[in-house]
Length: 299
Image (cartoon, rainbow, N blue to C red; front, side, top):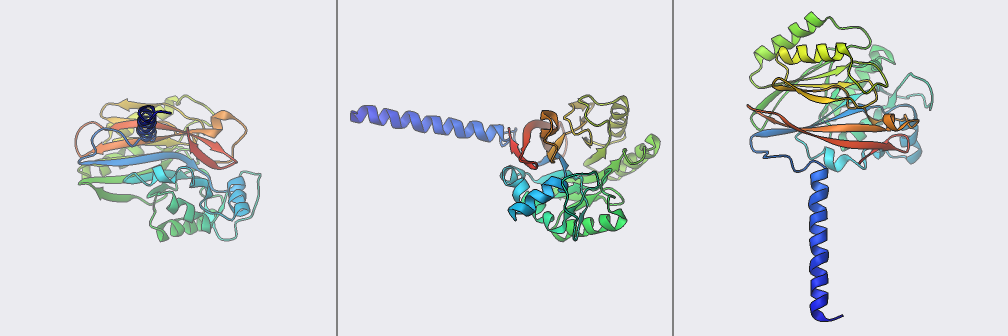
């Protein structure tokens, strides 16, 4: 091959590599407007570290395994959030079946490795091992610097000059009183200058459209002063929509789960938000798919 042809070939290859790299970063959500004076928040769906996910980690002797394909992106956000669908307890019974969930305390190492900063403990499985299981879980999260929210816990943090308050509700174990929820949200919003984010466990399992109750509750919370509402529980992805000056994600689907029996239970979505002190919230969707009974990968 002539020298000139070789040089041109090298130049073309370098261009392809450069364009491919930029495309990959944009697909992973690294390119989303101007971050100056804004907070980047990444929210994912249900994180279930029990049952076959637990046995998979133990078989591999790797507590980080569920997050090894996603941690590099999760850790880039200023705040990374998920719904912890599993109590973490000492001597968790190993099983691949049943609906009583638990994960070993050591599984919290994976959450830390995955870059999680805030996790909801307001859902229909968090009391699978009683209130003692909740206390063990909260203690384990706090010990590695992850803030629990829900069941009496809230979290406040200031990032890039934006003050953010996190609350979580569960509408599955027992139906919430709409007026009480609106009162709580309104009181927190009035006391907060900047941003109120709500996590809520709600809706009907294995449905891809939000129910009338989800829409009414979500819109009522935005009307009361919340800016972002993040939903979980259906195990299928549902709509993300703007409502007034807020954003409602009705269901992010599964993120770490062992429900390998259908495409829809293997699919989830992460939402990357850019949150300003004032102005419009930007967001983008990042689809994931679960492999090997518990490991999500970016799609």
